[in-house]
Length: 487
Image 1 (cartoon, rainbow, N blue to C red):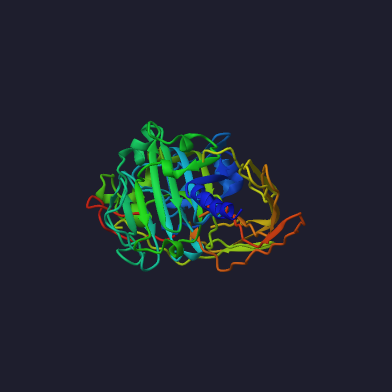
Image 2 (cartoon, rainbow, N blue to C red; image 1 turned 45 degrees about the vertical axis):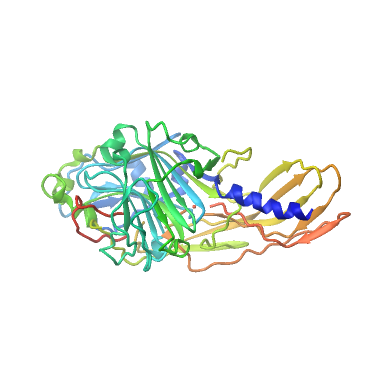
């Protein structure tokens, strides 16, 4: 018995090091309920008019089907110089995700062209830059390929040489260094951005976040090496250990990633000109000025749209992220107005599957094994907390979302042939469902209760068993150095 209880946690830790379980699967119409359309003034000072969800749907600039989300820019209207900018979309996930999570984005088409500035990224607007930012897919105008970048508070740098396919071009992630260029890595794959990306039908981006590193991978649609657990729609379990060397690798050797990155929301947007695209517009072969192009050439933006097949979120089973807020009953999470953010142009396969849920509902997960010595029943009365939050913009208002928790029961049974021992454990197990830019200002510890049973042989343990279910740019010498962009 003693040797069994020593060995079991070792096995669990090995499994948890690799396998992530599906927590959220955003496809088609689910984006309408799981994301907010941010009808706000552009914090990056772009020539854009972000629409509400209802306006965008009515204008045909948001189109959803059973397997696709299309986010378009207006491509028919000549703009008045004194009027609002070109209509577009900026959407943000309601949930937040922290460490020990993976985002997989299946994208069929991305915006591209002179004056455009598209981005897929994660952050917490209300606490930026203290809880960091991860730019997964971002660029401007007709520059390629993709640049993957971190932006943080002070004392976070990256080694120039590390295990990645891309090329590091800046190493200081601190937002006040080099005009918030961040610590960026240029992709090794020319099909990772723009027309080259679109011409092959897009591909898959994956971003893994742990307390010790952040990794970003890209596989184009026709890449024979794209992992099956990434390319399979709705895949329930994935193993990042099988994905090979990432395009970008950000280790914690010179940066405390655990503290520099908090809970994030996922954000997808398209703006025009602004602090980055406008600043370098004249250096990339684009006609006239950025503002004139955006105002007077609507047809130039017919290709400026996102076509997203799915975004899936995964969590490392059995892990806990202390950066995510927790509660045993009800939590209110507010996304407050952020300070201006400057940015720059210089600048698994197992038999267990879980289904994503957008509401907090009771869940029972049962696994069975057959040892030859003992029978162990472990019952945990565990509150499951779902945190729903809203957060890439400096907004003028704060938003509060309230969620409640429901109980979850995890039962593990083994069938012995010799003796029977029942272990009753009062084990707090917290399930956090969360998406990606914020460390919240408050955190409440979960409260749990247990109901012990009295077997023939009883051991009582109070071992916590906690489960987490959750959630640029630099330039080379080819990219001129101009700065500033805000959230």
